[in-house]
Length: 166
Image (cartoon, rainbow, N blue to C red; front, side):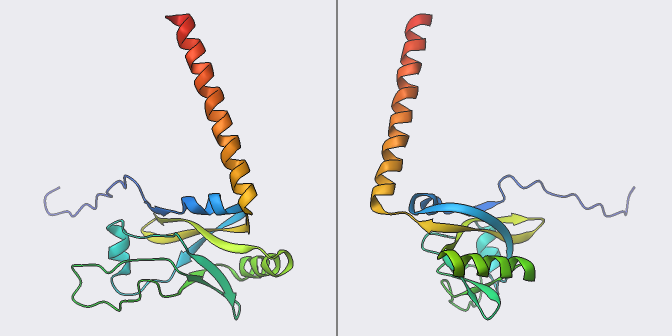
């Protein structure tokens, strides 16, 4: 066995880099797709360091391609130089049929393409995008009230069960 190079694959503990929790609050999310993302320079290393933000990000179909706007990938500090395009637009990689389907739905229904998750899969950076319809203020309040009511019901049930077992 001496002299043989064996590659040992390191297990990834958490390949998720960033989640857009605000998207579920601001939009009614529908169908979703996994897309590759075109990165430049040291952006991959910055992502591997776990530094990115999807809040405020959105995607648009332009000339038959989907572009991701407003996603923040900060400068990688150990890099000698970096094109400081931390919020530059980045191309998403999808099949032509998927792009056409997304474009049709966006144009017909007035939906928005929202990034929900940024992660690594087999060593490549991926973005999960979803179609979202913007919620009105009263929708957000209603969802918050429903969530609070279900939490209170769980608490009451828990108190009752603890009271009987003690």
